[in-house]
Amino acid sequence: MRFMLSAATFMPPPVTALPEDARIQLKAARMWVMLARHQRNPKPVIAALLGDSTPAFCTLMEGVVTAWPDAFTTFPPCASQLSPDEATFLDLLAHAGDGDEAGAHLLMLDLLPATDRQRLWQAATRAVPAGFAF
Image (tube, rainbow, N blue to C red; front, side):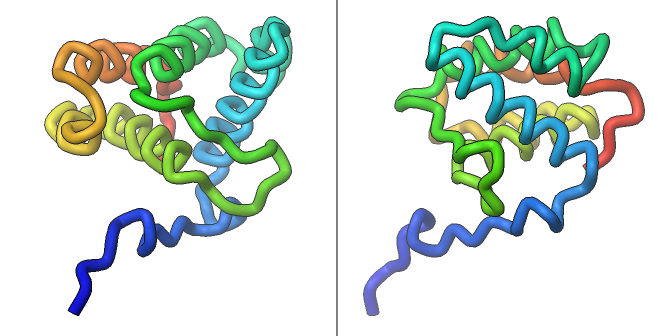
């Protein structure tokens, strides 16, 4: 029997099944990547979604796209499914919201070196708004 690769078995939930906070963070990440790829400042658009947490979120996104081993893959803002990278990003935010540093490091263990994992953990804890729920 052949071993199933995780990419082949990745079954993300539909975006509509995500909690509201997660959908907002996902939309902000998708908009940030789309605008940044077109050399446009994403902060005004993100501010409309995230308010006071915009600077911390943008710092996190800059860290993510810099640290990720390949291009950070996002789907268009209207897509109904999550990319594997988006799912990992939302899991990182969920760990940050729970204060679960060990879980965040385990999540990114095979993806990033320890220094990048620590930098993203710190940025994620600053980017998660108070009362954030997944």
